[in-house]
Image (cartoon, rainbow, N blue to C red; front, side):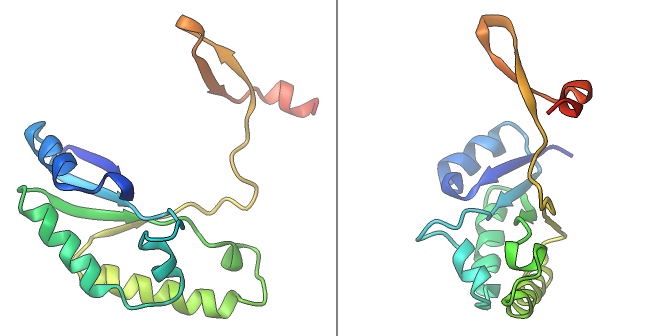
Length: 141
């Protein structure tokens, strides 16, 4: 199986056609963006997005691929246990029900209350900066 991670802003016929031409079998759709006009805020508001996800599955299927997973970061209200935690958990459960009901097999998510741990980047060929983690350096900061 060949799968590709597609950002919501790139979820269009040109992108899907391109990945189908490369032999991609599965699409992982990234829904993390919380920008206005993206589906992220509607999921977070607890809206039933079943029809949205069903349409996304159908769109991917027209290119003989499967919408195998969606990706959503864990929401801060849940992660940090804010006063809005219960409402956020209800919205998360609504999202899970919609994902499962549409036939999407997986939900990818990050639970990272402290973000990504990084130390200064190493330089590579052509002065490219590589994301690195040097434990010894980390202990000195």
